[in-house]
Length: 107
Image (cartoon, rainbow, N blue to C red; front, top):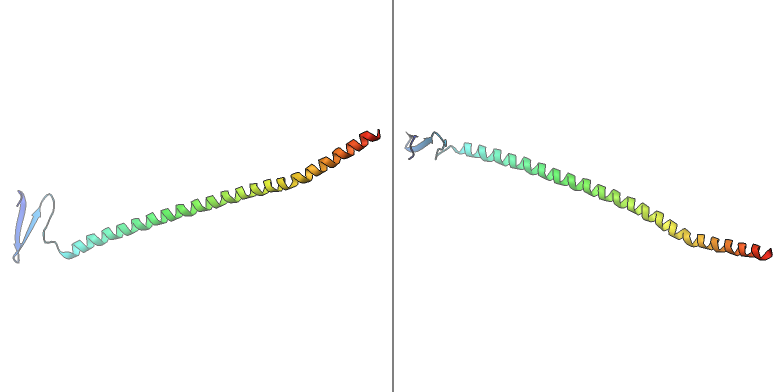
């Protein structure tokens, strides 16, 4: 026993109340269950909060990634359209050059 401990005898059960630690070796079971259940409730609330935050972050990140991919696809489509028009432009330029050469020959 420690100095400052109070010793009581109740129904042949030794109960020690330490003034500083407030320990009792034979606490009623319902107090333990109450402490455990409150600890479990806090842990479950923390788990739910963590899962909600993580899933929310993942959803926002995926939405942003999808948006950026769509924007890049639009830019690629514009570039592809331009690349398709280049041969047409080259043909027109060749035709204009031929016409100019024909006009110059006629003079």
